[in-house]
Length: 319
Ligand code: 173
Image (cartoon, protein in one colour):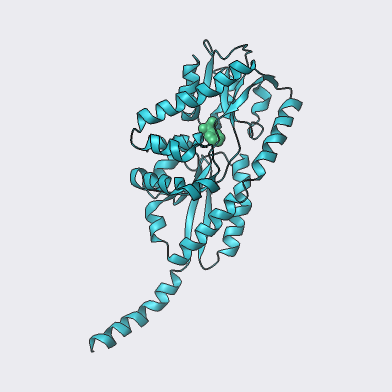
């Protein structure tokens, strides 16, 4: 056979294989328990993703931390055990300290896509953790300190507080004794009195019945809860242009739903009051110091842990 004829024959033989390879299925795990609002919010999106993505791209939801423990999700995505995860950076700081910096964002993810922050995040996530940062699913959601013992000033001396990396440096600076747990272990820790309180966003304490074991919420809230879809970089690079375009389109569609969080947060704030959770506040100057300290401590620690990317990310994520 002449080379041209030979190449044509091979190409013809490859067509059916190529066509059959057009649909790919990506496994997704959640680092949050399946009863969390985050998973409930993602479910209809995954359904739509699969309905509209037939023949192109599908998601196979594997489950929550029973499938892969919360703090092992990042490594599993990095290594390609699963292709996708719903997680927050605090759960994969074992891969890189930068993972936890996104809680400090003061701009929206839409702005981050415009001002280069999103690309910068991806540069770091690609290089340091073999991850592609696909979409930020939660916005407008501050974290709070929840307590079972009353305080009248921001002094956590003598208090044992459940943390993740989100709160670690701030609560340590306030004098707390720290205990790290995954969300799935908070209820038991409260029930057994192993901790006197915990950090969590304004939304979600009802998902795992923590309201039953919570007396106080400290205001103001601080930071900006980051919950996102991350993807194994090799799997991302293997997508065909059509598959990648489809994923990007659905990522933007997920972010376009982020307006719901303000309403969800208002609703949960009301529910907390109804559940008898009392709000601890400080005088205005103390509140301001509390909030300033939250950011100062976190950025100082971020820049120390990542002298190269910390300052850049601070610029790109601040107002
Ligand atoms: O588990 C946590 O408190 C935590 O780090 C977190 C982060 C983002 C959203 C919800 C919880």
